[in-house]
Structures are given as structure tokens and as C-alpha cells.
Length: 191
Length: 259
Image (cartoon, rainbow over all chains, first blue to last red):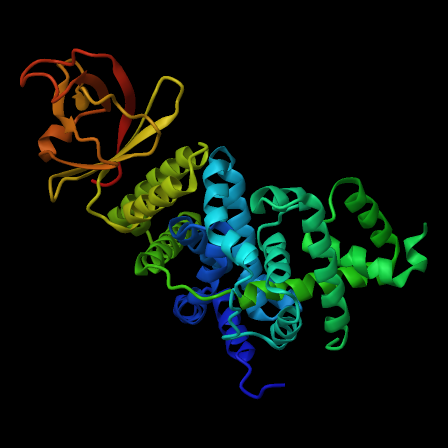
């Protein structure tokens, strides 16, 4: 265990937010908004939309912070899931503008996947669990890591990934399968 | 093939399930098996929790300061609405005469009612989030700002809201916010009208094409006006003193939120 685990502080703030303490919400926002905005941008691909998603996510956290206690997740992972789920709702509501979304996706990620350039992971405020995942994701090839991350963050199927990344379906399936196999071997050592 | 006898396949399916790439019939079969099998269920939960940390590893980005402002406004509005509800629910016998005659309470209650009406209209419609964010913000400001004393939601004949109107008599400011997707052609203008009962429509001004339009109006223009309307007119609106010449597109009741 790293002694200065940030989780303790975040858990205490979530407890106070659950009691409708507005100043705790502000502190929580100051500590986590950059991280969570980063997640929102990755899910919806567009800063303006991501700001709407971040707003909805924090109002959601304000209402349901009391539910955090019942989970076993690190606080950042829990809040990240709230952001992801608000982001996915946002994308579903915008299906009519799906074409725009896909275009934006192409610009953002095809470089990473095609050019095999690393998309750096950020371990600021990462929980123990996230450190483990970070170690294991680091062992994947860049493109495998990116495809696995995108599949998860944007809740995409194999064929949606293939379509958006302009890759053959078989390639996507293989990358995901190998990526998950390698993660399995690696994560098992941390469990 | 019985996957329950194959630990490596169980793990692989649990990982695909948590990642979300296991779809359709395969996903339903996995869920059915997992309901009956604790170790399969456990594998799925472990993978869900591992993958949740993907969100912790994304690069940071700074949101605009306006986001916190919006969150704070909405949280404050919610708190105020709750306070009004609590006051409404409080026993009537609290203070002899005092409770009923408390002007502040009635003001608050009416404002909250109007606020709820705006939110009800707005959330009942399939607006895109960006606009509904703005509308929520406007609603929050409406509840939080005592200066806004009138509000109207102007809708078309299919009851689709197209314009939110607020009026602040202290500053003589009419604020119009487009919430629908109606856009007039380049050679047309929208014109806002007060419809006083038993009198001719009175023009309150011509709207620019902007999403938010500010017009100036005196308090006397807005008193005793039950309804507002917007007509489609030639560019620049009708000549001063004449009534609407084009079709009326949107109408709505003007609700007074405070005395």
C-alpha cells in the first residue's frame, strides 16, 4: 500500500456530500474534476459535450453519494463509472448526430491505433487497483490497449469498433481477445 | 461444451462480459449461467471492478470554470425548492396568522411552482442535453433570482416549447431563450407580442437570430398581460403601430412568479 493513498480523502468527502454538504461537493470537484473531465472527453470526444456530461455527473454524485458506501470500488473508479454512464446516456440521446460522433472519433483515435503511438495513461490519484491495471495495460501493445480502453469506455461492440476504427472485424476481435488474455494473466498476479 | 468445467473459458467470457463485447445471445446465456453459479458470478464482478479502473487512467483535462458555476446554481436551486416544500408541508397552526400572511412564503411558493412548471415542460420534451442544460441553468437562476417576476414558455400548436421568456421589471429586461430547433429564414424575423385582453396586440420587439435575445420592456407593458405570442414577420418586423401581419407561431401564458 502506498501510504499517501488519496482514496481516504475522497471517501471522507463523499461521506460529507451524502449529508448534503455543499462545501464538500466543491472540494470533491476541485480534486477530481480534471480527472473526470478527461474521462468524459474520452467517452463523448468533444469538450463542449463533455462539460455537459461532467455537470450531469456531479449533480448525480450530489444525489447518490450515499450509495458509494455500498460499493467496494475505489472512489475514483466509482465516480469514473458515474461519468462514463452519463456520457453513454448522452451519446444515446444524440444518436441522430451519430455521424458527427463517428467523425470526431476517427480524428481522435485513429492516430493512436494506426500509428501505434502511445496514448499516455495518467496515474494521478489512481487507486491501488488502478495501479495494477496500469502495470498490466502497459504490457499490451499500444493499439491493443487503446482498443480495449475504447471498447470499455464507449461500450462498443466488436463490429462498432471495427466500423469506427476502419479495421477488419477479425483484427478487432483478435486484438481484444489477446488483450484480455494478457490482462488476465497479469491481473491474476495482483489479485 | 460446458464452460463451467473450463476455468480458462469462464475467465475469458467473464472478461468479455465486463468489457461489454460479449453481446446478444452469448451475453444472455452468460447471465443465465452466472445467476446459478457463484464462481462465474464472482469472476464477472472481479472483471467489472478491474475494468472500472480504466476510467482512473485517462489523461486529465481542465473543464471550463462555467461548469462548476452551473453545478452550484442547480444545487442551490434544488436546496431552495426543498426548503419551499418543507415550508409548505409544515403544520398550518405554527404561528397564529403569521404563517398564512407571510408574503415571503407565498412568493417563494409561487416561484417554486413556476419553476416546477418550467422544468416539467422542459423535461417532458426531447430536447438535446446542451439546451436542456441551458434551460436547467435558466430555471435555476429563475428560482434563485427574485428579480425575475414573470415567466412564459411559448409553444407551437403541437405543444413543443420553442422559447422561454423571463421578465425582470426592476431592470426592465425581457430575456428570451430559444429552446426548440425552429429557425426563421434569412429574410424573416420573429416578433414578440403582448396580447392584453380586449385590446390590440402590442409589439414588444423583434428578435435577432441569436439563441438568447434581450429586449427592453417597461413593467407597465407586462402587467395585465395573460398571454405572449410570437409571429413570423418580414425581416425587421412590422412598422411601428401596426399589428402582426404574419402567422402566429408560438404562444404561451405569462405567469407571474412574485408580487
